[in-house]
Amino acid sequence: MCPHCGYYGNRQVVDVLAKLSRRERKQHEREEKQRQAETKLAKQGMEKP
Image (tube, helix red, strand yellow):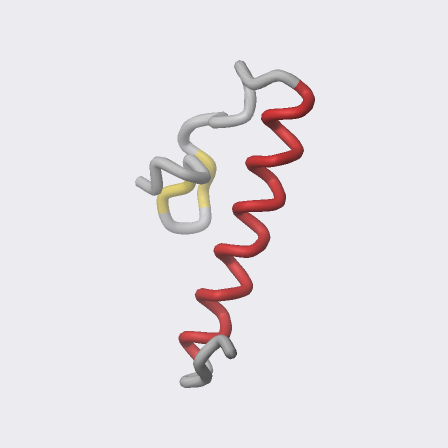
């Protein structure tokens, strides 16, 4: 299970954003989106400039 997003495989196990304030939730969502983009680039064999 990923402690950052709460997913195990393709299934959400823990709702990580449930207890966060609105501001913290938005920040966490932005960070997760960036993390996913970096992972996608790494899988394609490209490096982030």
